[in-house]
Length: 140
Image (cartoon, rainbow, N blue to C red):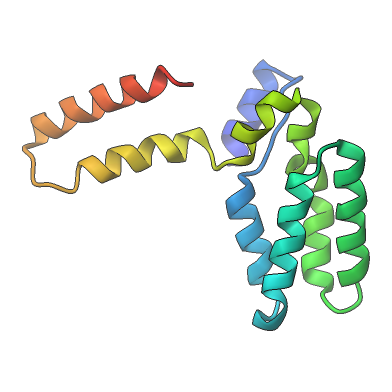
């Protein structure tokens, strides 16, 4: 991930980076004991659902503050990625729903994976993959 990110930063230095919320939350929750994962998951979800950046920052700070002594590894991980986890708040609210979801690349390839589980010839599969990618590209 570092290579493409650095290349993009060289071409478009103003670009903001955002982690995939679903994968990032899963990584953080995996660092916690199973007994606290449901509550921590709800707290992480609440951060993403706040109506304003100020409210999201407060909820984020409350979560970090409440976990810092018992779960320092998760707290450090959260604090390190704070800016990227909340990058979507820098954009107009009408874009938040789509930016909270998993990456568009993952969504595109999920469609392709779903349709290529059948047995196809190599040429048929390549043609279908190309066409599916073109269709998905129209929604980006």
